[in-house]
Length: 161
Image (cartoon, rainbow, N blue to C red; front, side):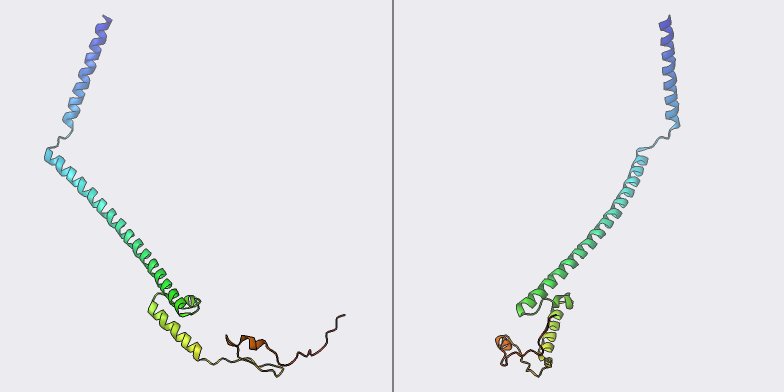
């Protein structure tokens, strides 16, 4: 008898659950296939728009990074061309730090102009206080600059105490 009571209770519980789910199912809105398709297409369109916006942002950032990298490489290439020009023509590489190397042709013109200006400038030599002669020293004439025709005469004898 006790088993019959538990069977009846289980059956009542099942019937209650079935009736509750039926009522809930009736209370829910039913959608047609067209409604479902429209909702899905709306969501897909929104996600596609988001993805397109994200793709555009990524593409813009990549384009900027590529432009920056290209600018850096161009600057390095121009500096290397200028350095090569200086070495090939026997100029000092210190001119790389003095002149702008972004335009190679302009750099070459400036280097030539400075070299011409320096070549035409007359060199002035310091006067010698004791009446000696100043000799211009050149690459071939270095030895003659150290040859002294007069013997050395000290001015005063040094006294150490």
